[in-house]
Image (cartoon, rainbow, N blue to C red):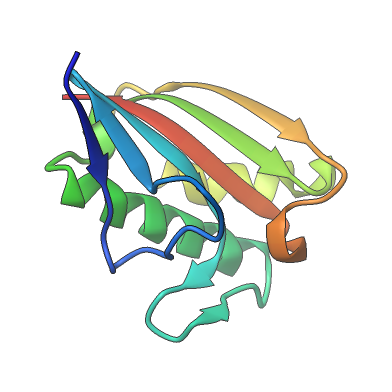
Length: 126
């Protein structure tokens, strides 16, 4: 199996021993992204919609580096610090997909990196 590491400066650098994404054959596995803005080196978390948009922009940058788009995404996982944010995140998230939506689960967790409220990971197929 061919494995290729995908990294871009248009998304936050990993803060641990992992890659932004790994292409394995025709599948791309994207690590979870949070609302860190790579242009400003700051968290973009003024509110839940702003935070979610930044997460999606980061994921889009990694997808683009691999030559893919949200149309290639087949599975997502959304992690929330509180399930009360579900509808706001869902509204923003839905704007990034057209037509067929990927499979997905959404879970609430006790804490996320840097105490953010939203983290999203994805799997895409080339």
